Length: 350
Image 1 (cartoon, rainbow, N blue to C red):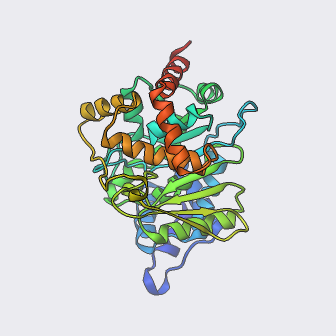
Image 2 (spheres, rainbow, N blue to C red):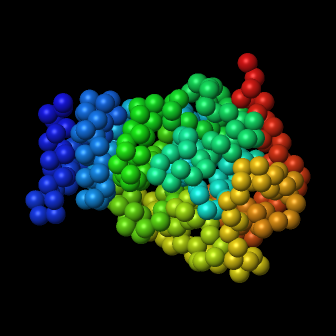
Image 3 (spheres, rainbow, N blue to C red):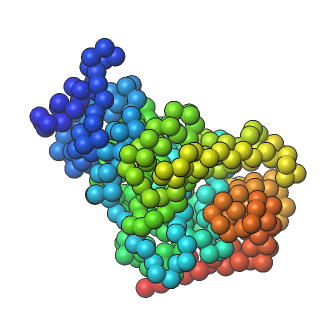
């Protein structure tokens, strides 16, 4: 048993009247003790469920991110890249109702010269939705068996990187079983959204469901004085995918500046209010194959809607409409499918 960690459990687990929050430094230490499994399984489980009930603070999240930055893997900057990469923070437990778009949006963005880094693991509690890694594997791109050095090489050559936590950050993946055992998504899920596995300035884009999550994350970013630009998206199932059935709410945060809001409406761009549902894996991959050819469909409309925004927001297009047009051109010209072929080639070369 870790006596030090026991004190952290006591602090956050003493109930609404006597319980307190951890300082940033205490949260950083608690995270390290959990990652290194210095704390016992009973202590880790108790901490995670107590933290879930209490709700984390921005200072606690900042401390936990400090530890991830200290211990976790990082992709290094590439001199030949003219732009800072976009880091998409997507919930690790996947999607269960709507089609995940981050993989194909990442292909479009990298085809347009905007580097992208994704991260995540396998199917995970509590949602057990489809994770990003599954879509890549269906495309013949298996990020799970290659070293971090190879990831770095692929990122340098193609602008795309993927941190697969079971291989590249096994200490973090070692905490996954606790999610099933406690039956609730712990605050680690918010930490993962904000994690930046990159050793330079980047543009962090992550999704959220509940407004307090956004506020907590922005407090953490301010405390850490991060130089990164941060964009928050009230997306589909907490993802970075823009919804079409409601107003899109986006927040843009940079240190020392007030939060900027962007609101988008599907009808302004001639789109219906349909969010493509999540289908079986064979159906999903078949539909994605038609999108890669630029063939009309509701899924293509959602891809253009999302890619258009991100190309514009990340400096690849002059406005949203221009971004949507560019995305369509990249698809129909086979530049995106060519990008996928290049990533396959780089990944499978000796």
